[in-house]
Each structure stands twice: as structure tokens, then as C-alpha cells.
Image (cartoon, rainbow, N blue to C red):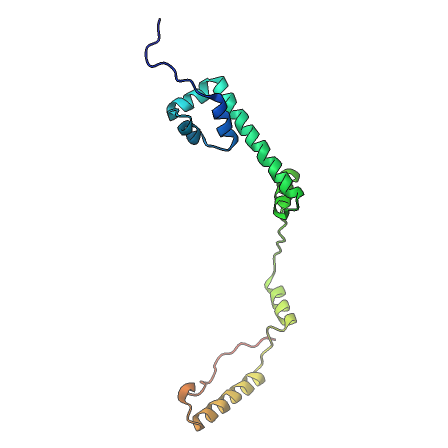
Length: 159
């Protein structure tokens, strides 16, 4: 039985390998080598020589890339040293996570002096100071302060 149809187009396997070596995608290779995408994928699945040319080219690309990365690390590229350590030595960034209770937060705030214990005597003194400042501002004709401070009602004290 004879085959009908167009004769098979010869593909330059060295070109396919070279394109794979420089990181071209399957789509790039099919376009540059002038192979219709459906024929490219068919050849990739069914033709051992074609598939081997792609595999060999991509293996050489990975080897060249790895060589360049190691060279960069050996030349002192700290980022590359860290990345390669994570990839090949299993090194990771360490995250310290701790659970903090409300009590420990309060203790830390007081230890740092960010907060202060407020009692009724301190509040009365601050209110008297604000009222005096407001009265002085009204005497000088500065209306920007608006009405005087309003009496404070429920203030929680810490003990």
C-alpha cells in the first residue's frame, strides 16, 4: 500500500537542539524551524530522534545555567549563594513565631513606659491644666481653640 499526501519535511535536528539549548519554548522552536505546531507535537511524541534532540538541548541549557549560577556564587554573589544553599543544601529562612498573651502585652507596654497608669488625681490635674489653657486663649482673643474642654465622664482606671 502506498502513502498518499505531501512528502515529509526534513527537520534540521541540530537546529532543534541548538534552539532548545538557548531556552526556546516548543512554540519558538516550531516557528523558527518552520514546523507547524501540530506536526511539532506529533514529532515530539512519536519520533525518537526529534525528542532526543529536544531533551539533549534542554539538558545542555540547564547545565550551562547551573554552571553560570555556581560561577556567580563563587565570585561572591551573596544572593546566588543563598539561593543555591536553599536549592541544593536544604537551607531555609527561619521564621520565629511566638504567641503572646494579653497579660504579656500589658507588661511589655508598662515596661517600655509607653503606657502609664492613670488615676483620678492625674485626670483632674490634666483637666485643670486644659481649662486654664483654654481660658488664657480666650483672654488673648484666640477663638481657634473653640469651646472649653467638656467634662470627662466614665474613665477606666488601671490598678
